[in-house]
Length: 548
Image (tube, rainbow, N blue to C red; front, side, top):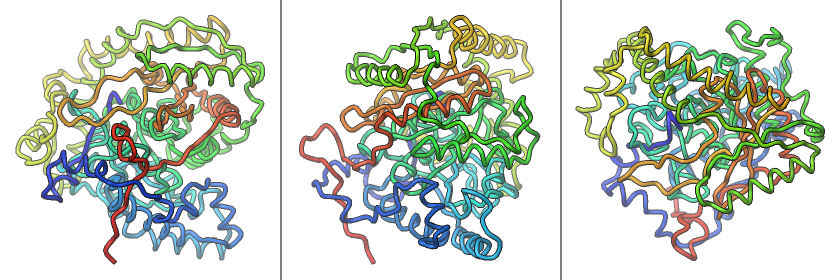
């Protein structure tokens, strides 16, 4: 999100149709059952279920990879054309076979052994796939090493299946951008209602998991880029405390706010992923308790965890959507029924926080992206923000839908060595952290905070770009604190999330709370690939036959 949500180009320049025709194609389809067309047998199983099936010999890593590749062909490259995937790992099947052999010869490494995982395409992998941030300028950006977060997943036995589409440059190129669009990957489409936004910037990761293209994925966030797409695609998504997961190997926006994070269909899967990432991290332990190697985020998952907990209730203005307000009221009732004590809390001055945040982000982006580009392999010819701006101007596709006003602003900035930057960064952190989340928790002796995550998904608008939706992401993002979203319900087939927010290093408590709430809620609901809500009678997607 603030690296906020936006669109992608390859889907347009591969076809003679206009971009508007492509976006509206699904709305011309007649209703038909998708279940008769695609194999859903493994699509929405959990990590634990898949691991148990492999352990029992009922499936294998190779079979899971083949299954996911088939669904990607059916749903992402054809059918509703979700465009959640930018590139597939050509070595995924070979890696899966090797892990199957290792299982037979030496046993399993852990719960991720042989599990296919997707990685957002601003996170480096050493597989034969470029890391593009959705930009054609980075089409030759072939990393020579995994980002530490990817290395941790690989060490845990995960198969790196491919790279997911995203809002280009993590949605930090233009204030008129379109969520989920990138020139390298096309427009990522929301599988619940195809003409609605998937949000961003981790749009492809969210859509892929919701559509059953993979059991889980890595996203990244600066401000809302994990929680917003997770909310709008009915998922559980965790933005960890900044520093818990190494920023190395992730194309940067902000050193004070960037972090990778896991996205899955339930809280337990997210806790499993985070445990394996933290335990197997190749960098120094960031936890104050220094217990990374033994950390287990699944240990406290208990449906009764909320009993006796004090929870601060944030009431963000969500417009006039009475259905969201009703869902939130129902969620609060579930928390009370679980034994939690709910207390309203006074919000800090969000306008001041957002103003300081934007000043700091411009400076951090200018410094960090110049450093990142300058260190890329020689095959990448764009070596600075200035050269990136010129590349976009010369491209037939990069600026077709929206401009690069954020790039231009950042290029004029003095960078992160400037006194104005340091003042804005310190002010933002203090207002959101010490005087924001920390104050609210301390004053009423709270365990955590809750809020609606974001509004329901809006219709994609290639003329005006994204609106500025009501969201609960900024407070935790600027403070650098953790933020978990879990499914809260649906508004006319569109998922809406409930956020759990806490102080630094409170991932365990947020996951425990999310699990206890999930145990009493509806949880993940599979998408129906509805073409549009605006045309009555179009209830499901009509697939066209695939060529053999």
